Length: 74
Image (cartoon, rainbow, N blue to C red; front, side):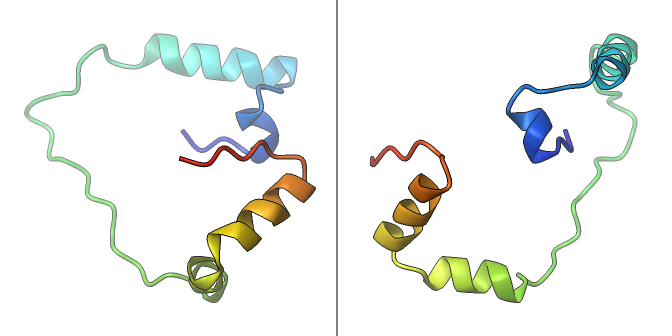
């Protein structure tokens, strides 16, 4: 839905909340079956994404925990 990190934490300004509500209320209930499906173009992962993928899970979890995220192991 394109939320910022602040918005994904549930923090919206009044104007942002009103715009989102309007967008959701005005969205079609069912996708148009005649409309072509929109495909997301494939792109190469950025250098940062590649570095994160190579990072050991324990190190990534520790960094996320340090930044205040809740980390739950499977």
